[in-house]
Length: 140
Ligand SMILES: [Cu+2]
Image (cartoon, rainbow, N blue to C red):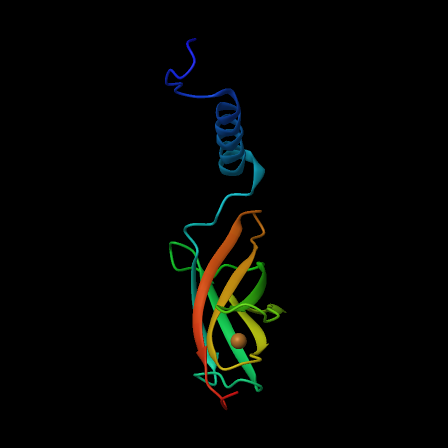
């Protein structure tokens, strides 16, 4: 091949592409359990809005496509703020029956929080849900 001719794919780049494609396929097909896409997550929080520094109780209700309660899920919540330098909130949900799960949260700062709800259903499928919540409270 003459020097300087266009090379559609150089060896290293090709290898990386193949590697990336393989990783994607593993993630989609066999690496991770399937997402429970038919399960909806509804939530409430008390007080609403929650107050930073004070306990708040979040309640998640899981239902399947037929609106039946989804029982036996193991759920965790991780709370993050958009700006760096803050420790995330981590909490585990307690099942209260009929597809209702409660989580006690104590927001450490007022402002916008992203709650990432993750977990597993008894059938092995994943729950992955994001909740945006705004905490009020004193400035500072
Ligand atoms: Cu913050």
